[in-house]
Image (cartoon, rainbow, N blue to C red; front, side, top):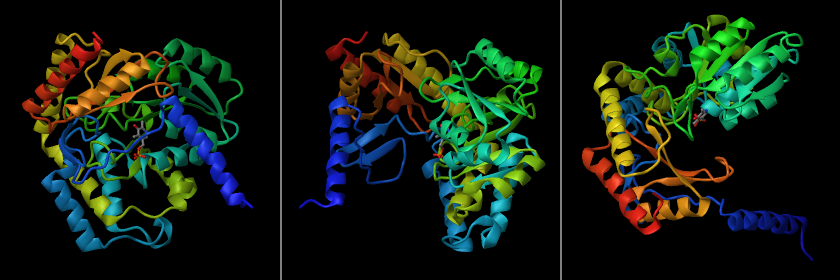
Length: 398
Ligand SMILES: *Cc1c(COP(=O)(O)O)cnc(C)c1O
C-alpha cells in the first residue's frame, strides 16, 4: 500500500520530469571557494562572468574585515526580530549609511531585497490604492504587489505612453497611485526611463518606487545608482535595493525614503516585524562595502572601463548585443537550444556564463547574459571574448 506521502512524491516527480523535458530544469554549479572573478568549481577553475559581484567586493579585504569585526564584536546573531531585542547600534548605523549614500532621510533593513519588496507594498498601500508596474519587474515586486490589498495594473516594458494611459484609467478610483519599476532590468541591462516616468507620474500625483538592485554600485560616475544618475531624489519617493549584489554580496535588503515612510514600515512591514534581524557579520560587510564604494571611485571607474572594453570587443567579434552601457551585457542568440549549446561550449573553455531562455525571456530571444566586474583583468575579458569566438566557429551564431 502506498502512503499519501509516497503518492505526493510520485506526482511531484512527474512535475520534475516535465521541467527536465522542457529543458528548464536548473542545475547548480558547485564552487569550492569564495565568490570572485575566478572561481574554483568541481570541474576546475573558471573565469566568472555571471555573478552580481560588480565591484569585486565579495572577497575584498576591507569588506571581509568588516564582516569579521561584526562577528567578533557583535556576535553571530540577534535571535530576535528588530522590535523585540534585535536592534544593535550597527543596524541603525547601516540604515544611516544607506540613506546617506542614496540621498534619503532614513532607511529600514530587511533580510533581503525580496523581503523588502514583499514588505513594502503591503506595508504602505491599502485596498483603495492602485499600483502600476512595469511588465518586466522583478519577481519580488510582483509578489509584493500581490501581497498588498491594492489593485494592480501592468504597463508594457519601459512604455511611458502605456503608463500614462493606465494612470488615467486608475486616477478616479485610486486613493493613492503608485508606479514601480526596476532601475535596471536584469535580463536586458536596460535602465528605466526615469525622467519620463517621473514626469507622467507627477502629472497624476503618483508616488514612484524604484528597485535599484542592479543599479547601486554600478550606474553613474560614482556608482550611486540609477536614481542618482538622474538626480531624481527625492522625486523618486522610495527606493529598494540589496546588499547581495555590488554592495558586498552577502545578503540583506533595504527600503529608503522619507522619515515617515520608514517609520510606518517599521510598524507595518511583515518581513521586518516577523523575521530575524540581519546578522552582525552581514551588517559589518555591508557597512564596509558602502565605505569602499564611497571612498574608492577607482573601482567604479575600472568597472566602467571593463564594460566599455568588453562591449566593444564582443560587438567587433560580430555578436549582437542589446545596447546600453550597463555591466549586464545581453548577448543575443535567438533559438533556445543554440543558446544552451553555446553557453555549454563557452563554459568548457573555462568561462562561466549562463544562457537564459523562455520563460525567463520571450520565446525566440534566448541569450547569454554576461556580467562584467571591476575585478576582471584584461586577460579575463580577452579570454571571455575568445571563448565566444571559438564557440561561434562551431555553432555559427553570427
Ligand atoms: C536581485 C534582485 C532582488 C532580490 O534581491 P535579494 O536581496 O537577493 O533578495 C530584488 N529586486 C531586483 C530588481 C533584483 O535584481
